[in-house]
Structures are given as structure tokens and as C-alpha cells.
Image (cartoon, rainbow, N blue to C red; front, top):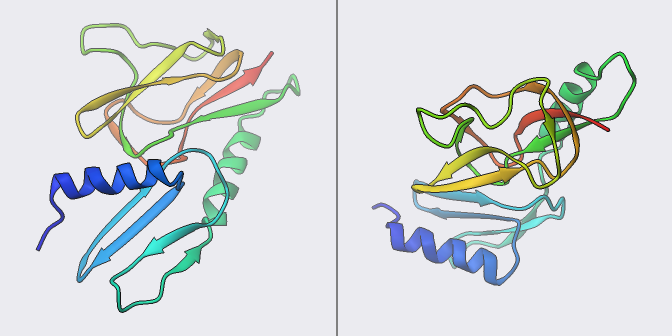
Length: 159
């Protein structure tokens, strides 16, 4: 038994319609989990009709890991450092195509609306914008590697 692509698409539409940040569905041994957005609110886990549905809190360990990475990379200047995180699960790409240069390198300046990378999910290329202004101080993910929802991709020294 497997989840069909159209079922997955319907689950994602359901998440959007009901503004859910996280959704987990378990069907026998198969499990589907999806997260979106940056909300820290609990979300609902859907299980078969005979099971009880209950809220699930976000994992605090992941947040601590990101904070530790940001603190470790804090520049000597004492300026604030912001993480640019992946809003979706997918594959991280630093450049728009294999023959192009990367969007941003360490030391490059970014503005709020600058595209810094692409995260591919289900054959859709999602441009990720900086959402802050400053200097890229660290790139945390290798090109063409899988990333998780909320995973830090870049560290930017604000300013």
C-alpha cells in the first residue's frame, strides 16, 4: 500500500486550506509528514479514524541546534546574525542551473528580496529569498544535498 501522488497533493492542499504548519498521516506502516511556514504553534496529527487525534509540539532540539550554529558563527564585530532557513523539505541548490554561478557566496551582500538559493520539492524549483539585509557569513549546506523544513541554510550578519 502506498500513498499516491494525488493523495499527497490533496494533503498539501488540505494544509494550505486550513493553514496548518505541520501534518502527519499514518496509514499502516506508511507515514507522510509535511511542515511549512515558520510558525511555532502545535499542529494536528491525523491518524486512522479509530485512533485519537492529538496535537504534537514542535521539536525543541532543532531550535536549539540552529541557535547554537548562529551563536558559533557570530562574528567578532558583535553584530546580530540571522539564519535563512528552508521553508520546505527538498533539495538545496546554490545556483539556478548547473552552468550558472551561485546566487551568493560567503562575503556577498544580500538584500531582503535577493534570491539566495533554490529548494526543489516535487520537481518544483522554489526560490528562497534572504528576507534580511546584510553579509553572508556562512553557507551551511552543500549544493544538491537534501534539506529539512526549518533547516538553516545560510548565516547572515545583519547590517
